Amino acid sequence: MAEFVMPILGSDMTEGKLVEWKKKPGDRVNKGEIIAEVDTEKATIEVEAFQTGVIERLITSPGDTVPVGTVMAIIREDGKPSAQPKVDVQREQPKKAALPAAPLIPPAPPVGESIRLRISPAAKQLAADLGVDPFTVQGTGPDGAITRQDIEAAGKRVVVPSPTEAAGAAIDRQGRLRQTIAAAMARSKREIPHYYLSTTIDMGRAMTWLTDQNLKRPVTDRLLYGVLLIKAVALALREVPELNGLWKEHGATQSPDIHIGVAIALRQGGLVAPAIHQTDKQTLGELMKSFQEVVKRARAGTLRSSEFSDPTITVTSLGEQGVETVFGVIYPPQVALVGFGKLVERPWVVDGQVAARPVITATLAADHRVTDGHRGAIFLSAVDRLLQEPDAL
Amino acid sequence: MNRSRPTSEIKRTVLSLLGEIAPEADLTTLRSDRSVRDQLDIDSMDFLNFIVALHKEFQVEVPESDYPQLVSIDGCVGYLARKLSQ
Image (cartoon, rainbow over all chains, first blue to last red; front, side, top):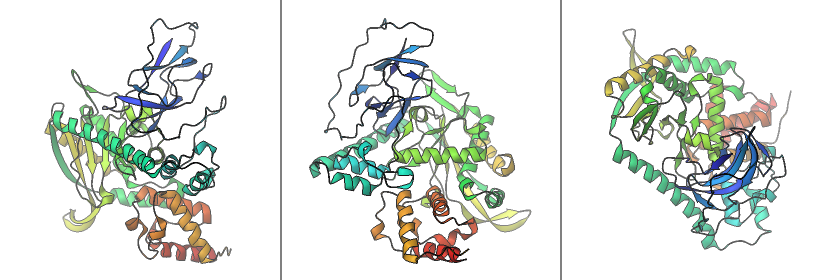
């Protein structure tokens, strides 16, 4: 018998609200399969099962807010008899939300059918504001996606909440996200002795290679240069693995796997940095698809629990916002963050001649409790070297 | 093969696709002669998704070297009109 508990989906998460069960008692669930949808300060997250077995009992009800670690369901593992758990499972008293919960909780999905709405964050927010259940709305966008217009049309058929309530809910969510980021960043600056390194990397070869690649690829398979940067970081971490890990109570722990968290700005404000799993083992094509997928789901509010809990390092890029250098703040309990700035043309000496070359500034913010500048410098040099051989990425 | 469409229809479709890429954007305030990326908070991934959406909708190939022609709505509409009439 295994207990399915409210997972920690971020270092500062203390509680989460169950939005929906994706399984019902008697259903089979495989490890890694999505079992529930949980609302946290940062986003609505699809939570994966940690065990394979059959759902014995669902304890938490949709709408309940419970602390991290609370037993939410009982899973009967394969080969084990059905029985009541020996542990006396105390159901946590659901907490009252600060504001009336937005009527977003969908009805239970039909047996054996997994439902995932295609709905933009803006439409989802509008649905919450108007009190529309998106599961009752027929989407008219691409592939049946629910658009703002669909929600607006449906909204005319329901009782509209008072403007004060609607505005309050939106502000509440934004405020909670800001508080979460504030707590994590304050903890980082309070506890982590950062050191910073920077280097300028000639991207000439990488960009020429990329242009050539994209000429050969259909538009749906084109690569962005950001994917080359992420892959170079992942491979460089194999050479300096102490930057790839977590700081725990008793010190640093290197991770055997490289799961790079990619910082994604949310349009409504704030950011998330979900993991791209096994980053170093993916081809550039696979990595591009993974990157697109995680950005899409981050902005649609459908990230998975493992993507929140697994990052072993974060990569952030602010180049598109026009800045050349990023001085990053490490996301605890990680021990390093790599930043990239804007790709710019600069005079650069190549074979003794000055030429205009595209260059980018790469920075490392690292935890001095775990590494010294010497190792950090070796890491940034490795990133540079790897980007000079894009074929090998 | 000539697959011409009225420019008004092309523009309507382009705006609709853009609305799906940046659903929170207020397209009514968008200046059609100015850079879309400068006016809306869209990044290179969004722009690539927009190009893919144009490709799927209009069945046109858009090489990377043509991207500068698609920075504004007017540029997009003109580019697509030319491609569709070829």
